[in-house]
Image 1 (cartoon, rainbow, N blue to C red):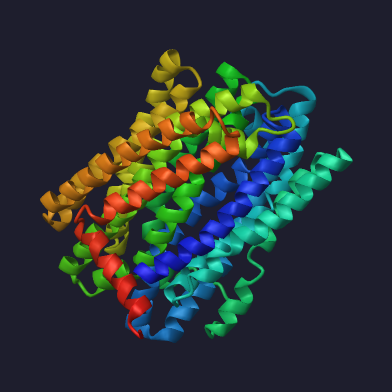
Image 2 (tube, rainbow, N blue to C red):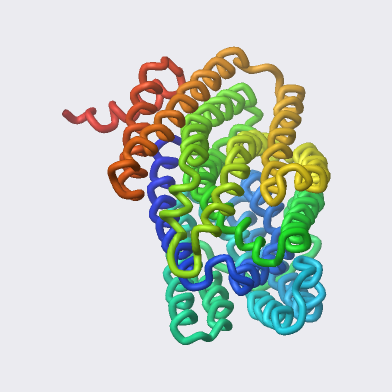
Length: 508
């Protein structure tokens, strides 16, 4: 898991740098304007539709593929893959048709303050973006297939291709003043990012069969996993719609883009660390579960949680301590002014903790999906989203726009606690005391690191520019964290350091 996860992180870092560039260009040309919010919202409907199915497929594909391969051989597993894709394309065609018909209604629900010309623009944007559904569904199947075959890098590079295309069209749209180029660019970026998949699939020996079998036993087995997950995703998407709708209704349509800008920054940590680690560990967890080697599975999961937190916790606390200068450096230019920086930094600070709790959940729920239990994480997810919606209604009265972000963080904390309880109940006790001690060490060191970053920035900012001050603050805090964590005697850290050391110096 270690070397694969590190390689994934490196590729993801490049992808996220490109994502940074994309958001900087977007902020420069469109800031937190209505058009920026419409651009964000137009991608919501296709994502909502696809997520109903795609998340279940991503969670269930590898275990079901393993089952088909074990029971019927590689040819049977490949047949299952082709059949699944063919069925999804039919579903995608129906979904696109419905999305085109109800695009205007959905836009009004998502942003009640939209009207007149802005509503017309949002409707057109959404209809253009609906065709991304095909690409998303294609990815849902073949991302899991390539991961199962040991190819983690090809799926990880898709974001780089997408960002290059989207950046080109954002600049073109800004220069020419044609806002519809934004939607066209997003559609092309979302679709063409998977251009390398066919080559990778061919190298793995995949041969597609154009046949649909609705009675296929393995497709039905996957469906049993997908259906509960659909319910969970529906709850999550409703919560997202409520977030954006409340931001629009209470604070104005332009505030949707504020939520999105802050989420994009947080998404960098989540994508580089959490997604990379969970993606690399899932095939191993699924294999151990199929072998009923639950003791080793628990050991792998426990180690993964600690390693994930060792990266995520300092990143989140560092982000919170430097939220204002980071937002300023990334977005403050052109239409993104000082007021936009202040509002977005506040939301970012409030959103950031959610990454910690969601990361814990994302690692742990892999164990449930690996053994074919999608009902438990789904039920927890639904209750979490209900918690989030209620939290929004209450907390906006105390924290304004930031209340939406605070509610998200608290709901993720709730979800992580409940999920850990049911994990322990289902799989038994692990080395809980050792894990708690490791988490406490990581948290204390991270808090001290955050304070060092904050005070270092304030000290350097009196003499140097904002960018130099931020760089020095991050560098000093980072050096402290690395040194402190290395001498903290955390077993999982010692193990990965030893592996890296022996791998680098084994031939010397």
